[in-house]
Amino acid sequence: MVTEKLKSIFCQFQHGSEFHSYKELASGHINDTYLILTKNRPYFVLQRINHGVFKDVPGLINNKVAISRHIQNKLSHLPKEELERQVLRFAPTKDNNAFYQDETGNYWNLMYFIDDSLTFETVKDVEVAYEGGKIFGEFLNLTSDFDVSKLTEVIPKFHDMSFRYSQFNSALQSASKERLFKGTTAIDYVVELKEEMHILQNLKESGDIKLRVTHNDTKISNALFSKDNKGLCVIDTDTVMPGIVHYDFGDAIRTICNTAAEDETNLDLVSFNTHYYNAYTKGFLEKVKDSLSPMEIEYLPLGAKTMIFIMGLRFLTDFLNNDVYYKTKYPEHNFDRAKNQFKLLQSLTEKYKEIQ
Ligand code: GN1
Ligand code: MG
Image (cartoon, rainbow, N blue to C red):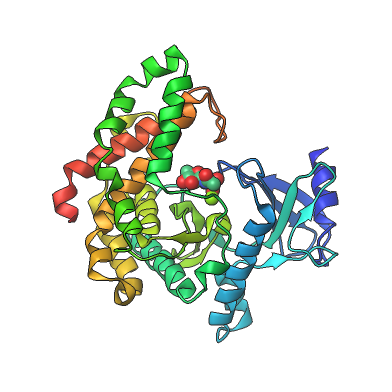
């Protein structure tokens, strides 16, 4: 059934390949993603964009295609084979659209799969942390001259702390007694950190920290690596929007420096790895330091704190809302994710002097 459906959607696109089978790539929390195996290579990645979360899917696809094109132009000096491993390529539909909308209203897009590549859910090697810094730094460099005003804001106020607090406050009003009770410690923590967690937003709003093109979902699993652990390509460009450098720096740190996965339930395994922090920061700054202001650099550590916090806050809010936003695998999955992020933040806070 699923096979037939995916096959028929795959056939709506121009690729000159024959469908063989599929595998679900289940690490994302929002979209449905499938690896399409063909009779002959290349393979493809077929994605159903969640239009409950992304209200303007055509705008989102435009962003992704435009950003890819921009990077392709900037890397046009590379041999074709290398270029195709370093930037996402989208296949158009038979009607020459960048996405296909099926009869049920779902939106699909198709990308070429980059062969012989690896992703990491967690980092176990300082070299990977360093390479992660370089690849996400390079993404910011390559998009730094893209006209921000041409981007659709696919999720307005995505990393806006006041907005996330107001969603949290609404959730407090409507949550069940049971979930409120379970969440007490986490809720208190969120309230306690309110002021510090607004510092970056205030600097953004005052214009002290400038807007640039940012990826906004720089978890380490959104970077492809070659088999010898070199950074290859930044993927999942759904959330590319105007933002501040701290979003991308901090969100990468959130996953790279966590000694465990984002949803590890044994919190003894969750701590902040400062060696990876230093390695990531080194790689990142090698790429972007000339384009960052002293103020942007000064606030990078707070970017790490803020992005770990905002994810914890969003997971907690979704738990209080009975899990309406993120995909979950069991009833308290969001709560476990929130506790994990707050444990990571506490660990970072203990080591904060060291990384500043
Ligand atoms: C979501 O779907 P995915 O895994 O690419 C979320 C990110 C979170 C991430 C947490 C649109 O990303 O903001 O950082 O989960 N994306 C959206 O792992 O909400
Ligand atoms: Mg994403």
